[in-house]
Length: 433
Ligand SMILES: [Zn+2]
Image 1 (tube, rainbow, N blue to C red):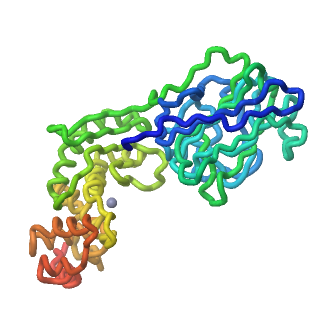
Image 2 (image 1 turned 90 degrees about the vertical axis):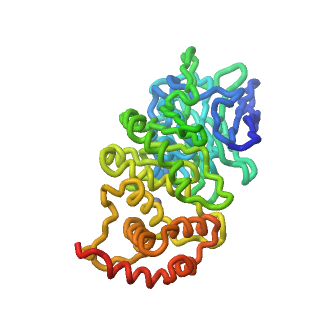
């Protein structure tokens, strides 16, 4: 959390009229909330759930949908994405494109609102919206015959583009027009391939929409909050995307998190180290084949994988990821090798948290293993080194890695042997089976 928050930047970028006889100008109002706290959206309507767009049909008629994007239905589902980087809960293109909205009947359009959310270049909106009261989709290849309703461009200075954006297009006294079809000609926000706006919701409010239901910020969030016994560490499990794991999260996962986060902090100490005090664990549906990962104080958990592994590997996996949170490497210039980082996380998991499972048992039957094979193999090697040479080895390596001072010479200092010599000896002593 930042000490100073920019509340909500609201601006009317353009006030203009299309058509000479229009006395009533079209207003385009825009708001950007840099940290995405939508409860602070002021002066502009929140997304509506039951507007005319939700009764219409969106079709991508030009351009390509990005492979990671959600379907067009997310544009009218009356829900906002869970957070600033939820690709499947947004619709986004790869390149330029045209989205056609068929309102199903000629509609008196009072307002058009568009919402987007992303931490970086995919946040601002650049599009032109056209309307047509007769047209059929096969006539839209070029936009002749379509009336321009508004051109929107919310781009600001390069450095502050991320955040939640709301755009509202309307007129003070009159409707925007009577249309059956709306056409959104969408452009990237820049030249790179990562410049395609994450559109979260598109609303079209008609003169028939009198009592709209609006999104309530946080209404769909399912959070379980808890703390360590002394209150030092605070945790939250976000099971919004995995409601069937609610009981499991509360009964099985939370107790282990509470007990083991503090333990891991104690097991991996170093001078002046201030561990994170707020940890968030959340289930996600868009992680592909990755079971879990940690970034900063946040642990992402693959919903489907956790459902299938809840009685087996799931909790140990979280202990592994919590170790990464505690490791907190990467601040210095000398990075520890990845195999060691993963080896330590699997060491705490397999040898300290769940030694009874023998999950990192390696025998000669495993073939040509190397100490630097990462994960369980390295964990096994670390355990052997600790037992045979130095009970403090993992602590020493961790403290150096955290300080950005990892060096291979540490192995020799701590055990009298090089890591290569230790690796050979460990291999020779692996049990036959
Ligand atoms: Zn890992």
